[in-house]
View 1 (tube, one colour):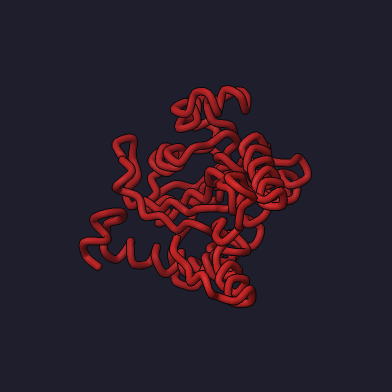
View 2 (cartoon, one colour):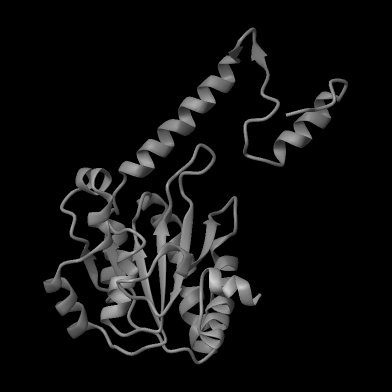
Length: 245
């Protein structure tokens, strides 16, 4: 990018501090500076670790078991399978669905799903602060909600299947996003009105970049509640909701 060649070091530092992007990092000949290269290697390693991460047993106990949230698996058996065969993370087995129907109430306005996705670290880092804000906010607005469900090896579409089985009007899938070189702990909320097996990507409204250097979890929770209220009132989400805005 272009930048004033006569800018002072303080001006350059101020500009660089405003973005996590690798700008004004300098070079040594045709190569990056050693410090730049090492920082890149560190961030790349963090991203790889996030993709390979799995929900910690202590987190599962503290977050799911203690609160009585169902903890289930998608149709995937291992992390390797989850990465190599993405479609398998979009579904759960019929037996598991039957168990959910016995354990969870049906016909609610909202069904919340928490999926590890491509960064279990994002869930561990943000869900503990995000979920209570959403749950309490929905209660304050008299929006009924089912028991949150935690999914191991879950993709975005798994939320649609669960919510459809439980006859929920809206699903919120809180999922660990694919990590980048500036953040390995970003969470997103995929919100869909009238979720079903026929749901496509354009039907979903997304709140992304939920992390401490993006939108803080508490702030994101309040925004998600307002968004869900609007979606229920207008009875659409995704692209159709944008058309009405």
